[in-house]
Amino acid sequence: MNIPRVLIAGLRGGSGKTVVATGLAAAWRKAGFRVAPFKKGPDYIDAAWLSEAAGQPCRNLDLFLVEKESLLRSFRTAHDANVAVIEGNRGLYDGMDSKGTYSTAELAKLLKAPVILAVDCTKSTRTIAAVILGCQKLDRDVSIRGIILNRVAGERHESVLREAVVETTGLPVLGALPKIRERLFPQRHLGLVPPPEHDAVSRTIEKVAVLVEKNLNLEAIWNLASEVPELEAGGESPRDARGSTPEKASIGVFRDAAFQFYYPENLEALEDAGGRLVEISPLNDAELPDVDALYIGGGFPETLAEKLSANDSFRNSLCRMIDKGLPVYAECGGAVYLGEKLTVNEKEYLMAGVFPVTFGFGRKPQGHGYTVLETVKENPFFSVGDSIRGHEFHYTYVQTPVGRDVDFAFRVRRGHGFDGQRDGLYRRNVLACYTHVHALGVENWAPSIIREAVRFKGRSTGRSG
Image 1 (cartoon, rainbow, N blue to C red):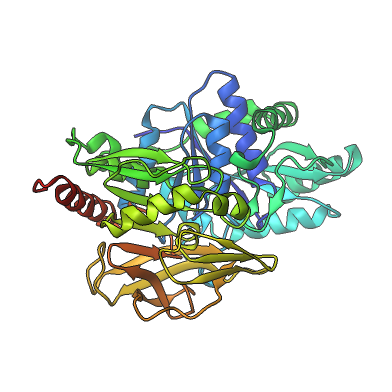
Image 2 (image 1 turned 180 degrees about the vertical axis):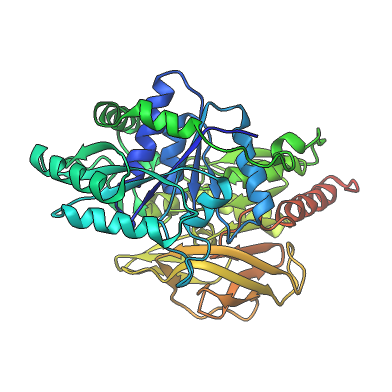
C-alpha cells in the first residue's frame, strides 16, 4: 500500500511543528486535496487543530499505547487520501528513556515516512546545521529529507542559515518562516488553547495556510511525500474490516467546551461494538437524555466550573440516573465533574456529587505522561488482573480523603493517578480514572461499556439484554 506521507518533526517541543503541519494540511486542503491528518503521541489539542485544518478526524499514532500492527492498521485509514500529514511530538528522538523508545523517530521508521525537521532558529546560525547533522548521524535509518527554518529574523539571517545547512548536511531547505508577533495558537496550562475555546478558528487556519503557501516550497514537499516506499499490505483498517453491527444500546458522550478530549478511535470502537452515540452538553442541556450508558472524556471543567456548577437540573438528573444503575465511564476532567466539589482559585464550585471527593486545581501538573495500571478490584468494566496502558496530564488533584463507600480499581505501576499509587475511583456502576485509554490499545474497553449498557437497558425496560 503506497500512501503519500510526510512527517513533521522538531528538535524539541515548541519548535513550530504544529504551525507547519497545520499549515500544510490547510494549504493542501485549499488546493483541493484530501488530507489525512495524524498526530504522534497522546495528544488531543494539537490533533484537534489538525482536524480543523484537514477537515478530517485526526488519529493518534503512539507506539506505547498501541501495538505496531494495530497502529499500521489505523494508519491505513488514509488509503483513500491524497496525502497524509503526520505531526511528531517533542524532539525527534525523545522517548521514554535514553534510547528514545517510542519516539517520533521510531514511528517514522515504522511508517517509512520522510521526515522534515522544523527548526527554531532564534539567535542561532551555523550551530543549527551542527544540530541537524547530529540528528542525521544518530540513526541512519531515519529518513530526514528536508529542513524548515522557523522564527527567522530577516533576509540576512535566512541566507546564512540556508548556506550553513546545505553545506554541512546536504539537506534541502524547504522554506523559512519569519518570526510572527501574533500568537496564532495561544498557550494554556495543557498546551494550546483548543478550537472549541478559540474565538477565531477559521481565521487562524486561513492564516497558517497563507503563511505556509508564501514561505514553503509546497511542490518540493509534495514530491517528498509522493516518493515513498510501499508499506506492507497487512490487515484492513479497523473501520474497513468491521461488518454491519446491529445497534445494541445508546451511549451518551459529553461533548462541549468543558469536555472535548476524545480519540476518534474510541468513539468508533463504541459504534463498532453496537453503540449509538448521543452527544450531551452538561453546560447547556437541562437534563440528561435517555441513554443506556455514559462516556465522559477529559477536558477543562476548571475553566468552566461556574457554568457547570450553575446547571443544577442537569447534575440532579445525572445523579438520579446513576442511582438507577446507569453505567458511567469517566476520564480525567470527567472524573473531576463526578466529584462533590472543585476548588479553583480558592473558590468552591459544586459538581455532580457522585463521589464524596473535593478536587483542587494546582499551578503545576499533578500527573503527566504514560501510565500503566493493574486492575486489583472488581469493577464494571475491567477484570481483576487486567493490565492497562494509558496516559495522564492533569493539574487537578484530590483535596479531601476518599470515603469508605468508594474504592480504587487500579494499582498504579507507572504514573501518578489519584495519589501516586491508585487510580480508577469506582462506586457500583461508575468508574472514574485520571488515566486516558486508547481503544486500539485496550481492546476490551469498548465492548465492556456496551455490555454494561445492554444490561442496564434490559433492566430498565424489563427485557433481557
